[in-house]
Image (cartoon, rainbow, N blue to C red; front, top):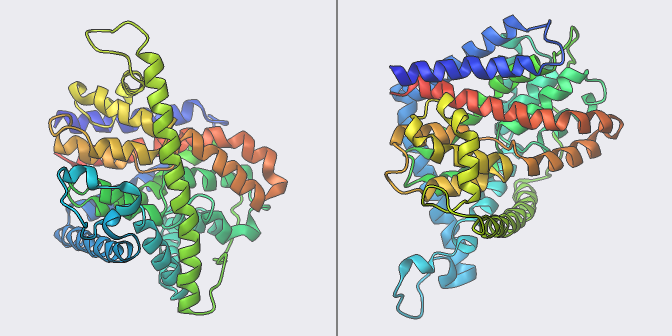
Length: 416
């Protein structure tokens, strides 16, 4: 009960922080905040508490297992024992034979191809329109913002604005910021399965929870964005405009695979560089004298800084340093490394409840690296708004972070 009250207090604090840094504190969007929180609460209770959706989560895990097996079949055919095929020699240490680049990352290719195929078959556009309809009717937002928010549940922060490209120039400042915040507060469908594969042994039903997080984050992002940069009195209408159109199912699979190759290379490159940078930072920090019998590390410093935020989402104080380190890694580096760290934590480092809450807290693209990606991507789509995009980007990172923390606090309040 106390932990639930702790999470509820956290939600109030996150909303208050958004209001304190608002561009117009006199215009607090009470109706949008109340209805948005209601939508979040209904979604969370429905997806987390109803037996039907618990069974759906189990089914999603089975789907993930099947996708992993299918991917391994393909990678074993191409790469042999490097990706899980039968080795031509005896393996002494099985842990050393697990190569991330060949065993896990190729899943991105399969998911990217399937996503492109589902768009061609009009399945994902139908889901986007459905979510957009709910957001527009409940939160009184424009069609363009609603479509962008819904699209961000399934695609990345640069791809989603392509669906409303004709309307970006006409959007007011608040609407543009809402689109940017939605991109920072969610993750792309192409990496959901990848992150879930990291967490399978650490968090039960990981894929279902990551999908739920992205869904619940969409209205949460609109709440935080509207508080920080009000939406204004006029809403920009809009209809779905697919960024690319395949000519056949085979063409869709081909386009999706080619897009997946770029994503896979980017993920692999980011892992190499950021893991190296963390090692360099820790090597420099090790030159400092130990504190309390332990050396300084980047994770330890981030843990101290983000521990209060971890406590506010419902993490017990004795676990807040560990959880705060994960939050810091996510904001300063990226969510990919944070999820990897979460998966590799010792069993007694975080309770099952805390691991679940952290799964939601880390589910968003809001980090310093993504800020550059967002500026570059949106500026190429709407070059006439570049100065405004650059000005709003740091706020979008903060808004996206507050959104994921608020969603995590909501889940913490519902989880005993």
